[in-house]
Length: 349
Image 1: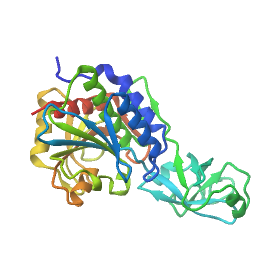
Image 2 (image 1 turned 180 degrees about the horizontal axis):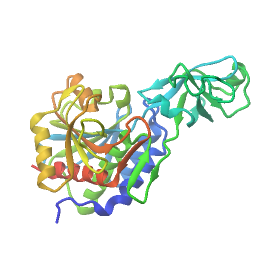
Image 3 (image 1 turned 45 degrees about the vertical axis):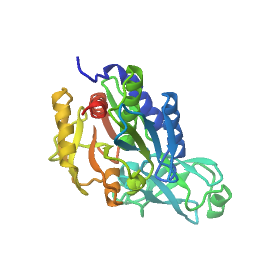
C-alpha cells in the first residue's frame, strides 16, 4: 500500500479547485479568493493569518519545531483593467499579468467599479464584424486593438461615467471551468488555483488520517505572483520553500497532464540541487508519476523570494498544465500525483 494515496479524494480536490476558480481574483483584487481559501483552512481546524499584502498563511503544527517548512501557491490570476473610455462608450483595457490576448476575443467578462457595482460585457476586437470591417479576421488581437463592449445602453463616454465605470476598474473574464468524465479539469486560471487546491487537499488528507508534517509548516497562498512579487514578503525564518505552481507542457518538455512536474530550472535560474534531488527520489521510490523539466519562460514565487534576499532553499513542483495563460487543462492524475508528492515531502526525512 502506498504511503500516500489520495485516490478517494478526487471530488474533494476538484471541489476545492472549483470553489477557488469561481471567485474573480486578478492580482491586486484577490480578497474573495483569499476568504474562500481561509474558510476552507479554518473548517479543517487550522489557524490562519493574512499579511499586509494580502497573502494567506495557514499554520500547520508539525511533529518537531526546530525548522520551519514553507509551501506556497498563488490564488491571484491574470486579468484586465480599464485604461480609458472612448467617446462612444467603449472600454479600452490594460493587462494584469500576461494574458494570451488572442484567446480572449469573444469572452464574457465582469467589470467591478470602485463603488462595488458589477456590470457584464464582452471582450472584442475593435474590428468585430465580418460583414462590416475588412480586417475583422486579420486585425491583431492585442491591447491596442481590443476593447470591452458593455451590456448597458451607452453611446458616449458620459453614459459610461454615469454608471460609475472609470479607469482603474478591474475586468475579470470567465474561467469556464469544467471537469470531464474522462478526468480532465479544464479552466482558465488553473495557474495556479489547481495547485492551491492540491495544497488544501493535502491538508484535508492529513487531518482525516491524523497526520502531521515532520516540522512546523506554513502553507502560504500568495496574491501577486502574476505580477512578479508574490513571494517577496515571505517569513525570513523558513528553512525550505516548496513552490507548488503549474507544470509546463510543450516542445522539448517531457511532462504530461497526468504527471507532477518537478522543475530543475526556469528563466530565473536553477532550483536548489539537493532539495530537487530529494523530491525526485521521493517520487521515484513511492511510485508517483513525475517528470523533470526545464521551463524556458517561467518564474515563480520561490524566485521572487530569492530575488528579495531570502536565505532559503527552494524547489518547484506542480501538476502538468496544457496551454498556459490561455484555455488551460490538467488531469486528475496530475493533481493526484502533485498532492501525493506534497504529502511525501511533508512527512519525509
